[in-house]
Length: 82
Image (cartoon, rainbow, N blue to C red):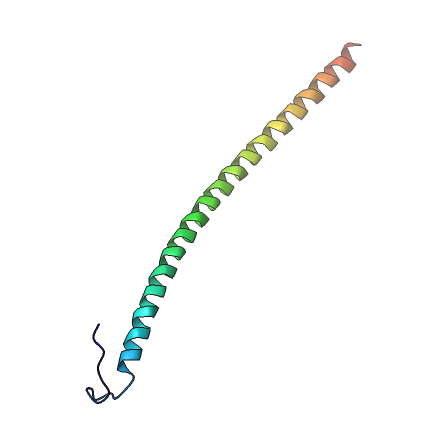
């Protein structure tokens, strides 16, 4: 990039510095956007994992409740058969 000398522009001095700063900020913005995309992806994966774990937990609780009912049923049959 060729910087303008003072007086080469109607904007006066500082054009080169502003162009340099804009280029630097563009690079920083690109890196931050890449990080943001990575974090969004990781967040989506974690949300999917959490959803799976919640579904598994609900299924296990239902199975646990069913087994407890079965145990109570077996206990009540033993009491009546004595």
